[in-house]
Length: 241
Image (cartoon, rainbow, N blue to C red):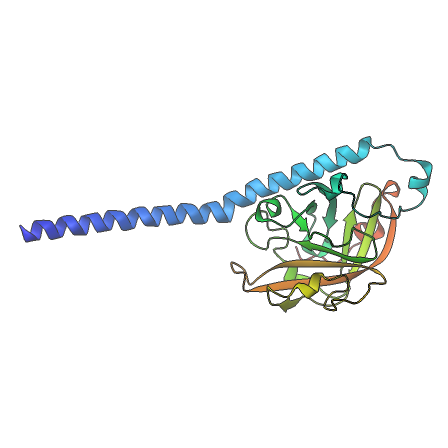
């Protein structure tokens, strides 16, 4: 009788462990593959929607002849609404992927692209245009951010202009609580900015959030979007993949 109960208990425990193993496998497959598929489709859709939206906008002769001066966010402007896509990132070192930038950095928004830190500068504007992105799962826009090197370019495409930034240094690591990296002058909170800057942030290492990997850069050129892609995207820029 005890032997029968032991066999039953062993079989039950075995079935539970097998079930848990299957559930764990499915969860890992979901995180590794399905979230990437969904996120990449979402990012592609965001980029297509932005291009269609920009194509229908009427440009004045002035906007075609010179890059516009970015204005401050307006609460009624789509670019200021949480979740609204308003720009596209192009980082040659990381490949040919076009990464939409949405307003806000909540987890649900980061599954649609890169997220713009609230209250940081707009593209091309004096101050720090700070952006966050996933390194693993959910489209992985910054998967290979560690491959960035000083001198690499980061191009931001908006409705009216192309802004080309250049990385000031190789990627570096900070604590997750170090908010100084998204200050108007990165790592110098309280200092008044004098030039347009950019900061990219992502989690480090893979599969963890114990650190943040940071890339900073400075605006080196800009041109009207109507003139076509800037030289940084048309020349043979260094590429990781």
